[in-house]
Amino acid sequence: MGHIQAENLTLGYGSKKVIQGIDLNIQKGEFLSIIGPSGVGKSTLLMGFNATTSILGGRMNILGTNLGTIRYTELKALRAKIGVIFQGFNLVSRLSVLDNIASGMLHRKPLFSSIIKKYSDQEYEEIYEYMKVVGIEQEALSRCDRLSGGQKQRVAIARAIAQRPEIILADEPISSLDPVSARSVLETLKNANGKYGITVVSNLHQLDYAREFCSRVIGLNGGRIVYDGPPDQLCAATVSQIYHKDHPDHHDNNCFSNPFTPASLPLPMCPV
Image (cartoon, rainbow, N blue to C red):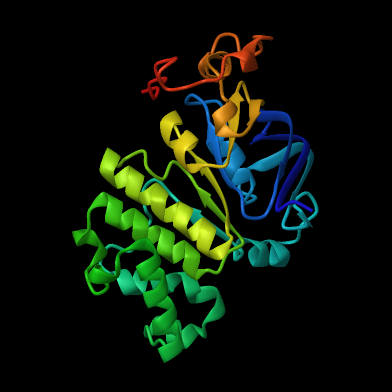
């Protein structure tokens, strides 16, 4: 059974349908990117995997749990297995890197120890391991408001890993970063994916990064999946179909006779 399974799934807000009738199966350990222009439902789909958008139709299972019938106590336990990384980092600025990463352990630490920030030797070793994985150990005692954007996002990744999650959801994790920091963050996510076998699903605007770092790409347009496959099979016609807002249902039957390469088609600009 896949870590994430959707059958004829429709997601939205109130009565507004954003994701419409999709089928999806994501296996353990995949590094998957959801791509597409702004406003097509990338974040709605991603946050649906964490049960923060409403299921308006169909069925979705996360880690073997049916989100359509889940109870609150079960949902709380499920979310402890899902790390979330946000575009805005969501760190406590006045706290140190070490304390921010340790906050990922809160669901498995006694409340009093968490309040007074008391960590066992084993927990210190674990936190240091996560800092090394993301390359932030030199800043262990630095306040997070003194870090660069790329450093903050690496702290956010380490905090997510500290949950010991089975899935990490990354919502536009590099959109506010410069190219050097963006590459560093994606390399960090890829490292965590390989080292711990965590399933990673990320929204990305940058097609070149999706092709370089991800093992699978989901292309969205009009709330529907228009491509699902390996990044090296993306061709010019499919890229055009994904990023074309007016005609998302247009298909080119000769798509795979002309594989997409960066040289064959200019990369679509990120919509403003």
